[in-house]
Image (cartoon, rainbow, N blue to C red; front, side, top):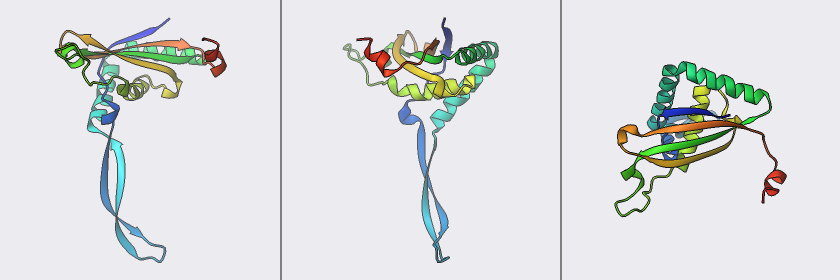
Length: 167
């Protein structure tokens, strides 16, 4: 059994997840003298905050569906399963392919972590339960149809020995 979520907002690239800022702060040496220093900090970028807001809005609009998905995921987890997340990010054709048929430099894989975080916030399920994740870019006919589709499936956690036996 799988659970599907259609028309999610497209997550930002991992390259757009964080911004760095700095500010001046007064610090104190061990001898008590004060000095002005610079403090750097990393914070969620405006793009990431906007994506989280879109996820929140999506969850509010689709409350019944999201509540049902959360309930099913919690049930699977309680039975010893973990979650496999597959995602398809639909971009307008010209954003994926050049005019001479070569792939554009638009990475889908660096959108995976923001998507996992967004799903985690929408479903109120820690992303540590997402054991296996993949993401694929696909084409859509127009920019208006750009979105993300996700399938969540329960899987049993595996050991390396089990993976080696697959060969």
